[in-house]
Length: 550
Figure 1: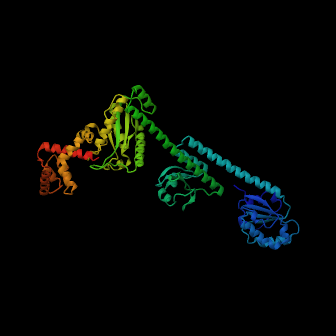
Figure 2: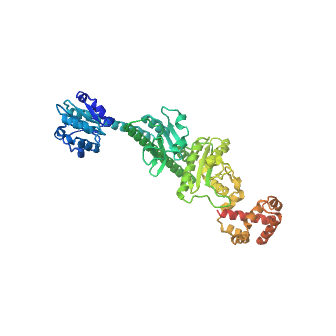
Figure 3: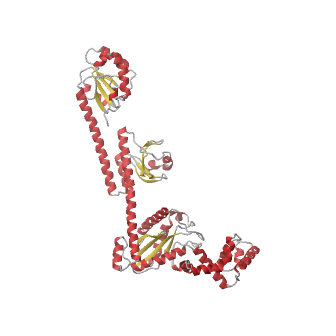
């Protein structure tokens, strides 16, 4: 801390001179930034604030009436105080100073014995430099501590603990929703620190810069890079501190915030490197070109896939809306972000399972995986873990919510290269499963997609297109002209196995209306809906039409 006027007066060199405070005693605790010796009255223009002015007052002896203007000029310049040496019979100067000092806001002091101003200057400047050196050393300690935490990629809790230790007060890290991510309590219980946190935090807005703010005068610092702020560090119960201590606390918060931001970016970059490495290997395994099983296992092992007895190919595909269009983000960058988030969730899920895995994006909207399992019996439980991770917390909270990712499972293989070749099969299963209506299964195998899977493979064949148009042209034309919802009616009829009575009992339409519309549908199609082969042809054509619309 900078020395105060009061502390300077306690120096032996001044105390022996019997200092007397004539006015401005309330400002004796003002810090002294520098000592300035002057014998001219027009000194205000030479000051920059915080100086303790020393003078023999000989000029005041010549013009005592200028005492008041002299003091006002020093106050205007922000001087910390004035010490006047009055030695001998200098009653005129003292009386003028006493009168002028009555209304002074800064301390006005007189000494009646000779003072070595140079000694005062040396001592005070040494104190100031020592204080500045101490601040530099503390700043260096803070810098070194958080630099080490950055280099070590320290976890969030360690960074928060370090900040709390250096500040000597509790520190809390919260996200943009005012939820506590980490905290370190100092001299307070966790209950008192976090009680009613969200409400208290919302009364203190996020800072534009590091400072005290809010009703409770929290010290705080934003965490993030430029426009990507994702949280803030706060000292919710800052101790009463001097300006210097508060500046140091703010510096600690800022360095801690920078460390958290850097570590988060580094962690993201590390994950990105891992994802790229796994993507490269997965592509190589799918197209081996002379790659041996031993080499494949060695390369996969270097990325964390353990040698196992069984390997299962999996594909996670962005879900499709039932009987609608793909749920794909309009922004390609958003789709990539979704895939990265899925890969992160899957990585955490694999760690909690019995297996290990390689996972990477294989095309837009699809993530491939090779799952290594030590035992066949662990397949179902591990697939359920992965399906839950892909579904996300919103599915856990609401089991009726649509899944964002469809999991297709290929056949279990005994070798890694065979499993990699099965990625295409798993992708086909996932793509076909996405067209299934009202299933809601956590994962799908080839036996779950059957005819729909075959049609999905053939959906781009022009012969399939010709078949669909020949079977459904009349209904599709009627739909295009807005003449009834015959396509939906056909789907419901075929879905009920051609049972008109069951359709009527479902309450979809009244029996007379239903029969009338089915008769009109038969007329449009020019077929007998009671004929089993006609229903089969129509059902295949309808499935192909719906799948082709994907």
